[in-house]
Length: 220
Ligand code: PRP
Image (cartoon, rainbow, N blue to C red):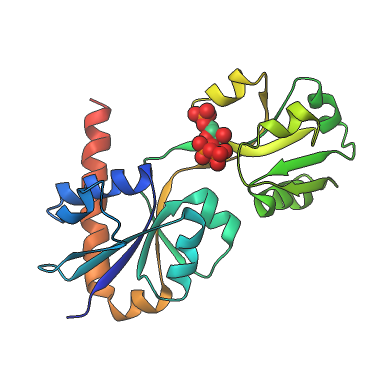
């Protein structure tokens, strides 16, 4: 049997995913070692391999078939626009993609003025303004701490992820418009899905069962 390979977006998403896998009896002890410099982790019994990658690289690994399955946020999937099958909403990592800025920017935004929009997600921002709102804006790509942009006058607004809203509040910014809801997703390489149909479907079925059970419990 060949290895089924998983690419996990480094950080909280990977941790939550591995906790869920563990509940399904899919364990990977070596991955829990915080001091390790290893990049690839094995479960020999089940013939599974896991690796951690930068979130924005996960769709690339999956599109090229270097990983059969990827676990990554919907934000990254939308931004990267790769050829993948999006198979399941994992129901965690919930947040929103929003247009944010100071209150003064609201009017400019509504009147369709030519504003500057800073974002780590230029493709999502472009799609929102050009295709959904039919509004011409200038998009400026940044790589982090995007909330700085309106504060220092680089842009009028930003397009970014809002989870708790505390970063916005701490910097005097507000959600001005909502672009879409986001959460963690399972993506699969189209060839892998055909070749390993049974193993992948079984795994997704088990994951679905676990998620439904958890959601049932949360509802009390
Ligand atoms: C993300 C996002 C916001 C923040 C939102 O940034 O870009 O800045 O989290 O979360 P909140 O609504 O709970 O405050 P991240 O921590 O990934 O850092 P970065 O901006 O430097 O990439």
